[in-house]
Image (tube, rainbow, N blue to C red; front, side, top):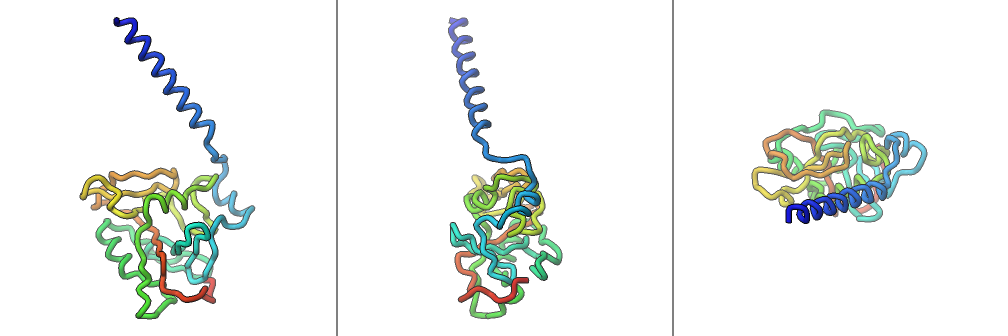
Length: 196
């Protein structure tokens, strides 16, 4: 019986190793930084609406091009990135208005991205950071938060490590991290004229 158990364990291990190698073979990443990759081709699925807003042509979501706390000016993200705990980030997102949109009646409906929205954002064939750097010019390789509903425990939040293109849901809500923001309806009726 001991022989049969060891034999079964050996076969299971061999199958798992084979599956692991098959998964590696199907990986579509190439060994090039996203700065090099996107310098030779147009931005992926994003349309620049000006004033720091990008629209994803696939999901129809609006993204702010800079991490929360920064403004988009002259083609760059300027200012200090808000690196704060989860509760502070959530409160700041609710009050967010791009600097050039001053309509008081346009709440913007900004929120933290979901896990699947970050996954779509980081599904590029390059790395360091694994994101379209022409659409998002100031992305670091830090963990970025998204909605806390994805976490199994109330004291943790989920985030995506853009540099490694991986998600984790065990980040203490007391930890300090930056965030990107997204909206289904940022409160604009037409593309903005100023491209930063």
